[in-house]
Image (tube, rainbow, N blue to C red; front, side):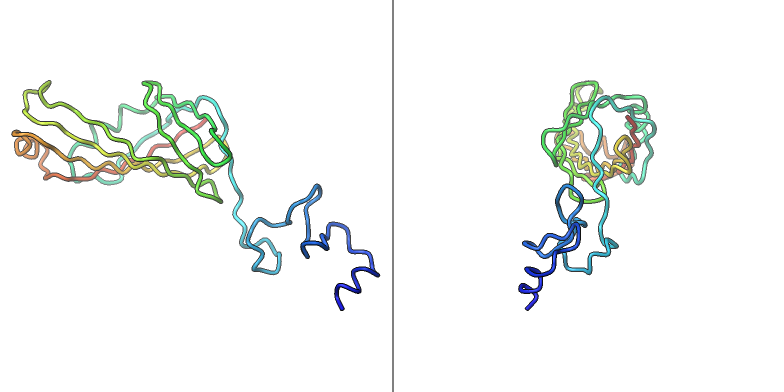
Length: 187
C-alpha cells in the first residue's frame, strides 16, 4: 500500500523513495549512523578530519610512570614538529622532525585514532652498562578539531643483558615497566 501511495503522491523534498530515507541536499542519508533510530541525529558523532601540514607539540605530561624514567622523555618533545600527511580517507602519518614515522588510522567517529606500535632500542654500553633497553610505544589519540590533537602514548620498557638488574636499581623499578605520556599538538 505504501508503495502504491508513493507512486501517486510525490515524495517530500529530500526523501529518497528507493532507499526509504531522508537525504541531505546533494545526496546521502541525513545522519551517518546505521539507521536504527528515528533519524533524530542524537546518536551521531561528528567525524573530525585532521588538517595536513606541520604540527607543533605544545605540551607533554606524565600520566603514570612505574619505570622511574618518564621525566627523561617528557621535556624533550615540547616544541618538536610533526608533519601530518593523509594516506587515505581513514589513514595518516605523523612524521617527527627527527624522521621517525608514526603510521595511524582514524577509528571512526569523533576524531579518535590509533597508531601502529613502534619499537626503539637503547644500547646501555654508551652509559657503561652491558644491556639494551627495549621500548614499545603504543600511541592513541583524538582530534578535538581539525587542527588540534591530544595523544596518549603508553610505553613499555624491557631490558636484556647482564646489567639489567643494575638499571632496575638505578631507576628503582623492575622490568617490564610502563610509562604513559600525554602530548598536545596544534597545527
